[in-house]
Image 1 (tube, one colour):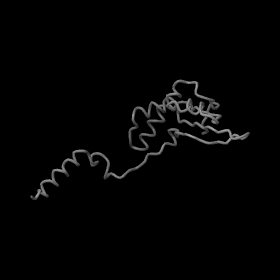
Image 2: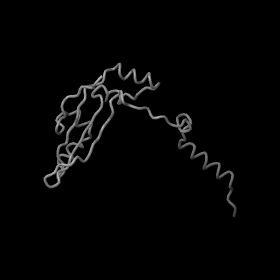
Image 3: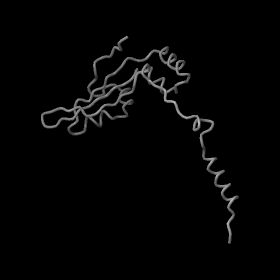
Image 4: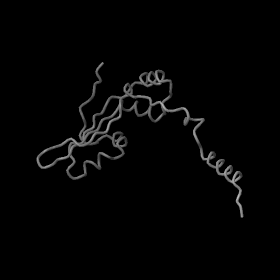
Length: 136
């Protein structure tokens, strides 16, 4: 099934997209030489797509990530720079759609509850003092 996308937006006229880009579009548009700042806005993901991803990956996405996908199913922004008479593609920022989101697996050694904390540092310091008394 092909993802349908509306035409790219030039600039950032929608408040939610301005928030999403943290104002980067305004900065780029006001930078000398930068041109063709475009955002490919995607339709929101459906709740069942998010639930399906969570079940398939056996994890729960944070609420802010779910809210992002319920607002737009991914994001793609590009910009170019004009040199002499030539427009050259320069940058791209993208967030995958929920169907292309990949869970990163990490070593359980540093996962909670085994992750080191500040308390571990304090314990190490106390042990060092007890095991190495000062000599005068």
